[in-house]
Each structure stands twice: as C-alpha cells, then as structure tokens.
Length: 324
Ligand code: COA
Image 1 (tube, rainbow, N blue to C red):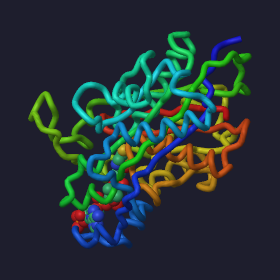
Image 2 (image 1 turned 60 degrees about the vertical axis):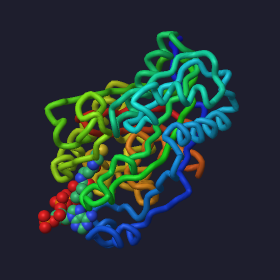
Image 3 (image 1 turned 45 degrees about the vertical axis):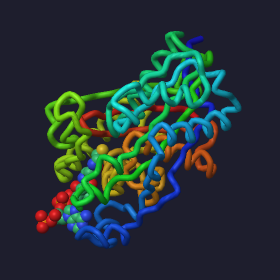
Image 4 (image 1 turned 90 degrees about the horizontal axis):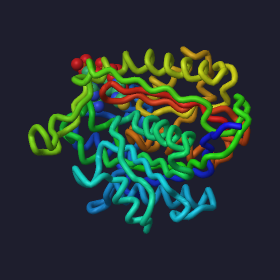
C-alpha cells in the first residue's frame, strides 16, 4: 500500500459584484464582440472595497470543508496559491488559518501566479504522501482587479477576482492508476520569459505594488504548446493517455487556449470544463473554481480521470492527473 492524496471536498467563492463586457466598453476602447470573440469572456467578478483575498479564500475553504464533512480542526496543512496577498507579509495562508480559527498546523503561500494552484496542490501532495501532514486545505485566491491598469484594454478585460479550494486527505491505496486521488503531477518553470507577463512593482524594487503588464500574443503562443506537453507528460507518468481522460479542468485564461490545447491532445472541447465566460482569468483561483463547478453540477463522477492544468507568469506551468 502507498499513501495517496484524495480530494474529499471542493468549494469556491466569487464576489457579488459583476462587471460585464458592456460595463468595460463604457470606460475603455473595447467592445463586447471583441472580448467574446478573442477570449470567450462575458463577465468577471470584482471584490468589494474591504473584501480581501483572505476573505475570498476563507469563504471557498469553508465550502470545501463542508463538502468534505470536516472542520478546520481536522486540517494540519494550508497551502495558499496567490499573487495578491492582503499584505506583503505575513502570508495569506496564516491569515486564512487565523480566520478559520485554527491554532495548529503549518500554513504558507506559494507564488506561481496563474499556475499557483497546481504548484500548491503538488507541494501539498508531496507533504501528504511523505507523512509530513495528513489533511490539507489547498486554496487558490486572488483579487487581480487590484493589480490591473484599468486604462489598458489589452489586459483589464481579461482578469477577475475569486477563490477556490480543495480538501486533500492522505489515504492508503494499492498504488495503481485505478487508485483514487492524485496519480501524478508535473511542474515546470522558465524565468527567461519573466518579461512577457509581470507586475511593474514590488516590495523589494519600487516599494509599490505595481500593475500587471503582458505581451498577450506571445504568452498565447507559449501557452498551447507548454500546456499540451505537460499534460501528456503527466498522463504518461501516471501510466495513462489522453484517451483515458474524462475531464480536462484547465486554467481559465482564454477559450481559444482551451480549444487549442484540447485539439493538440485529440480531445473534444466537450470534455473541457469551461468557466472563463463567467469569471474571466482569476489566476490561481481558476482551476479550483472550474473543478468545484463541475463537481457540484454532477459532471465529474466517482472514478473519472481528471487532468488539471495551468500556465502563468514566470513562465510557470504544470498539470496533475487525478482519479475522482
Ligand atoms: N478591445 C479591442 N481591441 C483590443 C483589445 C480590446 N480589449 N485588446 C487588444 N486589442 C487590439 C490590439 O490593440 C490589436 O490592435 P492592432 O492590431 O491595431 O495593434 C488587436 O486588438 C489584436 O491584438 P492582439 O494582441 O494580437 O490580439 P490577440 O488575438 O492575440 O488577443 C489576447 C489578445 C490578450 C486576448 C490574447 O493574446 C491572449 O489571450 N493571450 C494570452 C493571455 C493569457 O492567457 N494570459 C494569462 C496567462 S496566465
């Protein structure tokens, strides 16, 4: 028998305020038609004044704990993926730990921007299978609206705020590709591409938060290639192939990236969970938001093979093969 990290529950949270493409067209030179055609995005959610990344993360975490029929007292590890922590430090994870009323366990953030959830899931999985922890909350939470240059139509239309979470628990399993849980995960990064997607400020350089800057066309080009290759690599590591996949649960940046990646893998778009239309790119929150949507509406069923994937600034990218 080996230890496997099994997802026992999922949860997500989107702020109440919705900003439509038409709302944006009133303030920057864009149209609903352009945004829908080039990205598939129709609306995004924006956190209220005073509503912090940790608040979004706590709301998603509570829903994931309820779905898992566990409480915060059962958790001994919190890993939060975010590029928009409430403060430079302490970590968003320790803030969430405190807001959940936890007084034990280990809590820390990982920074891998839009790939953050895959990084956090992979780190938590490694800690669970080695016995460093038993029950983990893995959270992706972001308020990207606060990093945007609202006068730059090339970026401000693409992002939104939100959070998603999963509860992972170590369980004993035979060690085959039929096991429940995380069967394999693969991560990559390549800092040569730091300047294609970045924030032009930070605590150690300008002393300010900065605004998001992106060369969208170049990011797009790398995304499809990197995502298709890491998905194939991850499935092979699990002894599986694209034909075994029931659902692709992707990072939600652009519908055309989802279509291009699915095509490269030979999978129909019908097997891809698409939520980008409803909440745009929520960075580290987008994979668990999509996962939670498809779990709650019943598309994802026990025994299904899922492939989670994401790519983000750095570049960073990764995938995880999960048996539901
Ligand atoms: N409304 C209207 N026109 C816009 C616009 C907007 N919101 N944003 C850009 N344009 C214009 C550009 O100025 C450009 O005009 P020009 O040809 O006169 O210079 C034209 O549209 C085409 O721009 P381009 O950047 O080539 O478009 P595109 O088809 O590559 O789509 C993105 C742009 C950003 C949607 C696309 O590149 C993308 O999604 N990239 C990846 C982004 C991403 O995934 N980032 C996060 C990864 S985690």
